[in-house]
Length: 402
Image (cartoon, rainbow, N blue to C red; front, side):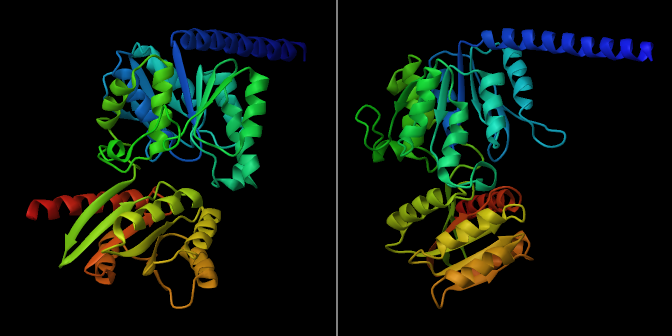
C-alpha cells in the first residue's frame, strides 16, 4: 500500500514537472512574437486574418497566419500555404503546436483565427494560449446559438471572452457597446471601433472594393487596415498587398457559367451561414444583378446543423424576388418543413437530397431562365466545397470555349 502511494506521488510530481516545463516553453515561444493578433467574430474571420497577414508582410514583417474557416490552413512567412492535418476532433490545443510552427519559421508576428466556439474554450484560447496584443471581433451575429446562445447577448459575451488583457481591441460597428465596453474596461484594453462605410479614416470605397478578385466586404477590409495602421503600416502599402492576397477557399465568389444557351452567375455565399450575413449578400446580389436576371436560391443543408437550417429557412421564406429554392445535402426535410410552413403560396421548392453533383448541375441548369443568378447558401463544408470546385471547373471550361 505504501509503495503504491509513493508511486502515485512520483507520477503526480512528474506530470507537474512536465506541465511546468511546457508552460515555460510556451511563454518563451509567445515572447518571441512582438505582435500577436487573435481574430474572432461570427463572420469574416478567415478573410480578415488573411488581409492582416498580407498587410503586415508587405511592411517587411515575417508573418505566420492560421485560418480555421472552410479549410484550416497555415500561411507561412514566405506566403506559401500548408493544410492543418488533424487526427480526431479539432481541439484548441492545436493552437499551441501552431505557435511552435510559427517559431520554427522565425516569425515576428502571428495572426491566428479563433477556432473555439464554447465560451470557456474561447476564454482559454485567449487567456491561456495566445495572450494577444491585438484582438479582433469582426461582428456579432446569430450563428452557433446552440453553443453560444440562446440569444445574441450571449453570443456577444462569448466572443468578448477573447478580448486581450492590457492590449487593443479592434471591432466593426456593433450594437453591443455596453457588453464589449465593460469587458474592455475590466481588462484595461483600448477599444477601437471602425466601419468600412461610415468611418472617415477607414472608408473603403466602391472602386477600391471592386479591385478584389473575389467579393470582399468593406467592413473586413476596414478592420484589417486599422490593425495594420496600429502596427505602423501605411494604408496604401497595406491595401495594395490585400488586393493581391490569396482569398480563403470559402470566400464569396461569383462564377459566370454559360451552358446550353443559359447565362448563369453562381454566387457562392455558402460560408456565410448566419441569417444576417446571408440576407445582406442576397440584397446586394439583387442590387447588382436583378435588373436583367432572375434570382434563385441553392440551399446546402447539413444533418448536424439542423438549427441553422431552421433559421435560414425561416429567413429566406420572407425574401422577395426568389423564383425557386433548391435543397441539396443532408437533412433537407428539416429545411423543407419550415419552407413549406412559411413560404408564400406558389413558391417552388425542390428537394434534391439524393442527387449527386452532376445531377444537381444538370437539374439546376434546366430550371434556369436564359439569364439568371443563383445564390448558394447554408453550409460550405462537404458537398458545398465539392459543388463549388465543380462549378469553378465548369466556369473555366466554358470561359476557354468562348
